[in-house]
Image (cartoon, rainbow, N blue to C red; front, side):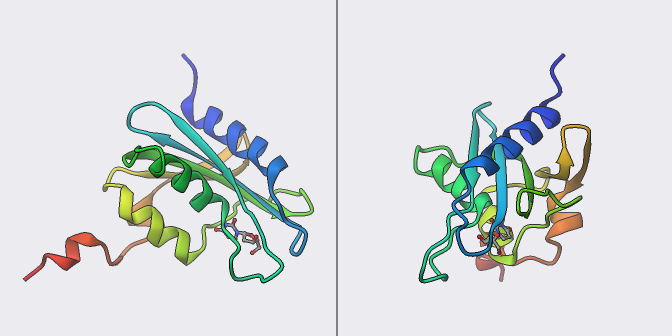
Length: 140
Ligand code: THU
């Protein structure tokens, strides 16, 4: 049976080819698996004005949400300078917050640098504990 984690890693690595990074030269790729089985990929997209830069994770998740897909199971993320993928490329705080909006406690994050070298993390336990989410808005 096909290993979905390996497949997501492969797609995330492939997505780095499209990274638009004339300023940092730091390529990031992401592949997110929706609960409906579809996979959306994304790369980082930089801008001469710097702050409009969109990270790879958000590109992937926004592509999905813009097509009506809002529930996800797991995401693979890779990245590094000059095409040299880091052992592990940790998502920025903004991306963690955006991801948190659309995922539940079982969501997994896969970080690594090849189809054979990655670690699977529990998002809300290992990556984004003590987060603020929509659940907090309804607390009394
Ligand atoms: N970047 C991402 O795409 N994802 C992250 O989570 C961290 C940072 C991008 C933004 C920018 O284009 C480059 O990496 C350097 O910060």
